[in-house]
Image (cartoon, helix red, strand yellow):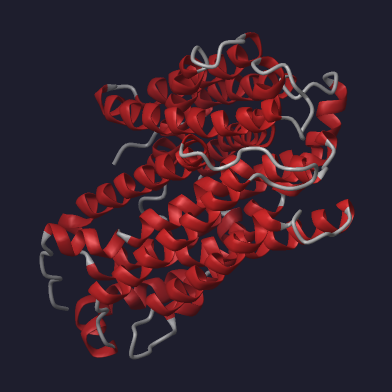
Length: 437
């Protein structure tokens, strides 16, 4: 098998550049879905149900795209066709979703339309996102993979910040941030329009600049690894789960509490900030829409805090301590949110929440991959481990309305629930057995 060649910085950049546009779309979805559905008329107690679809689509679509693209060979490549089709569908849906209240439909019909649009949006985003990870695996040698994934991480975070800030940016430009009852403001609609345009331009750029290897070249560079992947993929999932190391399940327990907490952040932050800072629960008011814009700013602050803390984490000698401490900081941040009435002071708790986010993205896979050394079926196990991200969000979404009822029906109470979940997760970190390489 031939050694994969070293790639220049710009070739590595081109492999992942489309991720910037995909992440803008994902950030717009994360920061604005609750705002859109509450504007359309959704009851806060039903709000979490709308968040079942994103993780559900993730757990279904990503393995399917990965499996199908492994077997696809076209003149355009094996991964890029899925990337391009996913991006095209995402662009179409991004133009429709924020307009769900503008077609003259009744509230119930508008909510169903929005729900269907959200389903297609998340499906297409997952379809466009997965090929970027696989392109790096296909075409980058082991020596350069860390650099390639760091470039992808940078583009991911940069896209998130841009997507989060779009609504307030367009409001400052003079685009209306208010609209009649049941209609999403133009600032949000135009954020989705421009995000869709950037997404397709980024994907076109990657498609034009990246030339995937043909089957013969691919076999020359990946022959052994491809057969290994096929062998790994042939394992029975139930058998693999039965034989999984205990660390797999213990980290999965921590993941359950962490991802449930962040699902509640994405679901209830808009209503929380509107009530605690802008003193409004009226989704038709200017105050509510201003709060919605500010949530994007807060999520951007969280993303920046995450980048900074990710640079600090490697300095810890004790990985479990670093993981647990990060979750404690995030839990404190969540618990602070309901008691802060100044929009700028909210930056502090969201920086702390960013610390937890940084650890959640890095630490679990470190523990699990270390524990899986010598087990085989690494690809299959990591695919199954993705379920520890998706399943907790689905469960949390199903019970979110019941918990909201139980804590008094104020959305800011769910921030305290999220904080408690992270603190429980931080305690569970210490049952993990860290098997170093």
